[in-house]
Length: 207
Image (cartoon, rainbow, N blue to C red; front, side, top):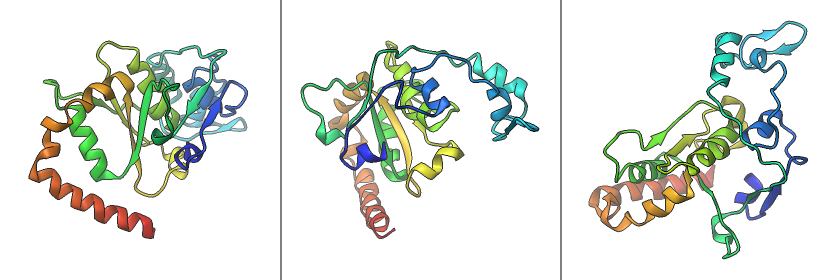
């Protein structure tokens, strides 16, 4: 995704995604991950070192039952930067890589037309689960939610300092964009935040 963000569109298939977790969360493999219950938790001596993201293998087993699989066999996952999209593209998920002030605006807009407080969800998962798996599953629903993410410690090495993600199912993004001119984005409050965004951008460039 880093290459795509820098302007090089990429296309992935079952043969080009080599990470076992990545294969699962992109739908390119529905096979159970052998030893995963130990890999995500305590590890198993002489077999696999544990990441210790879950307390016990049994918790991993119960968690996995709540993670439905989907099948992407024969399909391609295409990552393209927004300004490079053409009429031939039909994106299903929009992923923002952003710092806190920008995330604030996107988060608030995602909740603008909702009476419940959960317009944005933050389920546990790997980096590709936050950006691909969960938002794609939401895209299949009549009332999709937005996914806040990139909290996976193992994925943090793949993103710049202070950057998080917020991923929109496309149908939700289109609806949300229609509310911009009547939302908080036209208020003095947001003008103040925009100034912070400008300062943050300047600091980010120096870093």
